[in-house]
Image (cartoon, rainbow, N blue to C red; front, top):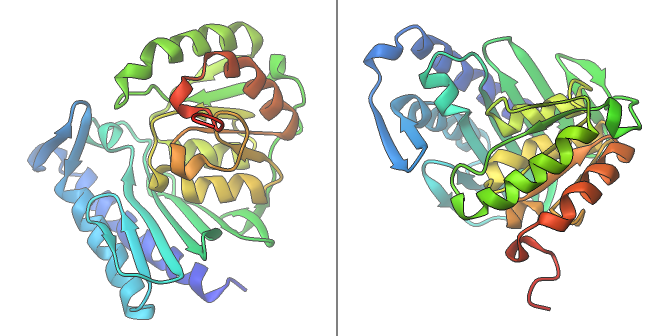
Length: 270
């Protein structure tokens, strides 16, 4: 039996997914605007977000919400962290790799998470202490222990261009040490793929809490490790995340650590 709060998240994610799937049939008529360089929002993002918040508010009207398009609303020890369409750029180009990400944080601790891929109808769910699942089937991170055998996911720092040189150094360091690197363009799905064993590791900087929250819980509940640029738990605050199987996580972190910008270091300013 799913926890009632997770059931609400699943219902909201599927509602958003149906809006996204309908819109995917008519991409040429969408209204799109640019929030900033390389960062787009469409009426679908907003419609999907409204649908998610509507489902949550009907069941939990007193809970707080942190959502990508509408921002922060309400004050509560329960906070929903929502990305209605992660991978908007993929979606707008008809590239079938994007998802809905919904997480719940209670007193600052992630307790439930859903990442839903409406194209493949893949529903990734996790509740703290109860494991991670894909369409009701238990998932675990892969058993790969060596980075030389690992398929690693990543994302370009397309918003934080100041970090691009540092990122290229990391990419140059990681590439010869792994089996391959993929840049799919939706961090929440990338983290879900780590949880499902499709990726063995993942790293990206310049993210927002709604990109990371649900996927991070999936990875940890699937037996993996998640941390910030130095392996510490502050990834939601810093926007820098590393994830992977326990051994690949450590090797990946050690490989990129020398190139991490000073502002992303856990001990910066101490």
